[in-house]
Each structure stands twice: as C-alpha cells, then as structure tokens.
Length: 347
Image 1: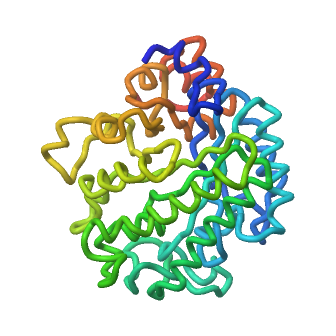
Image 2: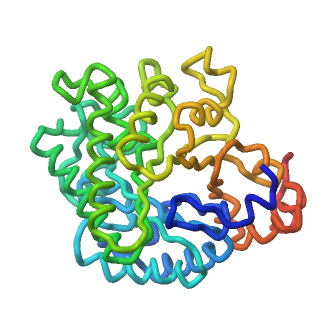
C-alpha cells in the first residue's frame, strides 16, 4: 500500500471515518490509580500519542475484579469508573482521534494479589506454565454467563464514557484465548472439546457485545476483536482452529479484526501448508473485506507499505516517540528514525 493512502483518511465502517490508518496499539502502561480509575498519567500519555494517529486503542481495561491482568490496569468494571473514562475519551477526541477501549478478562493469567482476593478463574483448573499466576477455579456455566454480562456492562460503560468503540482482547493467552486453547480448556461440556465447542464462549461474548453496541448507542460505535494467531506450546491453539473463529467472528457483528503479531509478515508455525504465506495474507482470504489491523515491528515506512492490512497498529515507536507518526510524511528510514529518537540502532 502506498504511504499516502496510509496517511490519508480511512472509512472503517459506513459512519466511522478515521483521519489516517495509523493506530496506537493497545498498551497497558499500568499507570492507573490503585482502584483502576484513570490517572493524570493516563491522560497525559494518551494526549501526547493520539495527536497524529487515526485511532487510539486504550489497552487492557478489565471487566471485573477477577479479570484484572496487572496492578495499575484501567478498570471498566464498575460505574464509578465512568467519569475517569469519560475524561480519557475526551482527551483523545481533542486530537481529532477515535477512542477505543480494549476490554479484557485475565482468566487464569493473574493471581489473587492482583484481583484483590477475588477468585482466579479459567475454563479448566489448569495453572499456566508462565507468569506469576494461581491455579484457577473452573468456570461454571452460571459464572460464564456472568462473565459475558461483565463484558456487556463494560461496553455500556464505554458508551456512557463517550468512547467510539470497544476492542475485545482475545490475544496474549487471556480468557477468550484460553477457551480456544486445548492447553487451558479441557472441559467436557458444551464449551470444551471440539473446535466448534471451544469457539462458543468467544463468539457469545462478541455477539452480545456487538448487540449491546448497536442498540445502546446513538452515535457510530465499533466493536473489534484482537487475537494471537496461534500458540507455540505443544498441543496449544493452532492457526487452523483460530481461522475457524475468525470466519465466525465476521458473522456475529464485529467491525474489525486485530492481529497481535510478533512481526507484521510472520508465517504460521503450526500449519506448514499455510506457512508458505504470511499470517496476514491467509487471514485476508478468510475474512474477506472485514477491516484488519496488522501489528508487529512496523518500524518505518517500508514496513507499513509491505504489511498486508487495512490499519497499522504501532506500539513501541509511539511509546518512545509520541510524535513518531509525523516523521512518516518525511519518509525517514528506520535507522534515521532511531537517530532522531537518539536511540542505538542495531540494524
């Protein structure tokens, strides 16, 4: 894609226009107050980094106390969070940028210190092999319904706070991905076993959130879904299984799909046949015209032009240099950008 197309406006949906295709990737900077309320540091961070991008995805707002991923995360779990969230959306809007609130439930990827004593839960009582985590309690069907309601309630809070959309965090081994993965989901009911059972929970969340988003707001409001394409652990989530989820997500009302990638042009490691193509190329064939965000080491204009997405999520560069997107108009190389940022460059 030509750089001028990337830097020009983009129509995400019929009533949802972005000033350009650059997205501030969802970053959990862990600077919220002790109770999850938005802090002055949060406002300052997003004020500086939303100036030159089309969309700012605010990273990892937890939907319930049990779902908190880390100390300092932003909360969307209670009505008392709405005023701070409103100040955050207004701060982003002052820069002519769309504000998206990413919603997350940690599932088993947390511990009771972070959840302040609330139970750590997951699809099955299997402790994760990495991270400072507790063994989760298996979610009952009744609590699964409550978690879905928590996502819907958080969506309604985002609407009341003036956000332009929400993004469901189905990546990085959090709860939505845990239901997809045979490593973390070993249930024997309607939510476990076959791929058609394992997709049910994330699809229910996406469907109910999309339904709420399209009925509870009178202004254009989008719903995105971010996912990791596969897991490298033996017996983990495969790219093939995730493609099933992606094809079905397209049908339940989401407005865009975000790919959480190590590198924008990475190839599958769990499907050798599909591994001949980049992940983004394969996903494009599956989701068709559904807008797709690509991320992962998008360090300079050449990478942006090569990446096979509609939108381009940038994290590290904007974290270090808030006005990084301005340099794209000047066509700097990666080495020149690092020099401008006064950082060592390793090639």
